[in-house]
Amino acid sequence: MSKVNLETVKAFLLKLQDDICQGLEQADGSGKFVEDKWERAEGGGGRTRVLRGGDVIEQGGVNYSHVYGASMPGSATAHRPELAGRSFHACGVSLVIHPKNPHIPTSHANVRFFIAEKEGEAPIWWFGGGFDLTPFYPQLEDVKHWHNVAKELCEPFGEAVYPNYKKWCDDYFYLKHRDETRGVGGLFFDDLNEWGFDKSFAFMQAVGEGFLPAYTPIIERRKALPFTEQEREFQLYRRGRYVEFNLVWDRGTLFGLQSGGRTESILMSMPPLARWEYDFKPESGSNEARLYEHFLKPQDWLNISSL
Image (cartoon, rainbow, N blue to C red; front, side, top):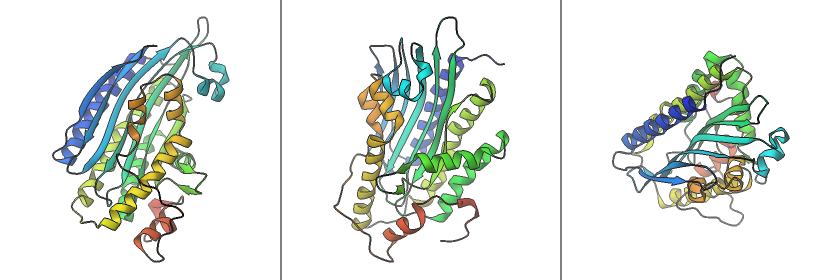
């Protein structure tokens, strides 16, 4: 069995952050990421990078973190009781991009590695991550492209990988209190270690490196489209769903806050502007209604010809 190597994972994640920031700056055309390095008193730190007020990206964050400690936070031991009494390291890259134009979807990606150790016992480790897309005025062409990239990067690892992790994404990014998906999904995986370290790490790398090819062509197709004030208001309303999911359901947010992580970095996923409206219902036959009727439900996107 291949040996677990934390330093190799960290080196990849740091380069991934650099590559994604560079790719997003090129896609934006004018915006630049500002870096904020931070340290965690209990152990570890990170590099938070935020781009604000770009030509395309209203606000986006690409965060690298590596935190460690002598004991696990309560949210983790509740999920995995075998971790109690172990020291831990958790590292990852997480990003959320909130474009200005309502015709460009919001996007999220995350890749991470976790290891918990105890003297005299084998380490417990796993990889996790994925990416998902949250459109406001979705185009089937964009959704199919997003899922095609996801499927192609999964193929070297087995035929069942894409359908399994696509379903996991649909199930995970689901707002139970709204009875709707957060968007059109993508990939989500967690607790991955059954392939051994090298293959599991290779898959995590493939997911991280797949984000830019999945997202930047969508930016290019949609960034010049005109939009109305009504479309902007609907975008801000739907951004509220993003806030609701991250604060109510997201395990990563809970782990970060309970482990004493840096609050500004953990909550960088929040949109710069959002709005809520009591009992909003889109007008029948409208583009807003099309989102609810056709896109906020799990579907086999690769085999749909039209909506």
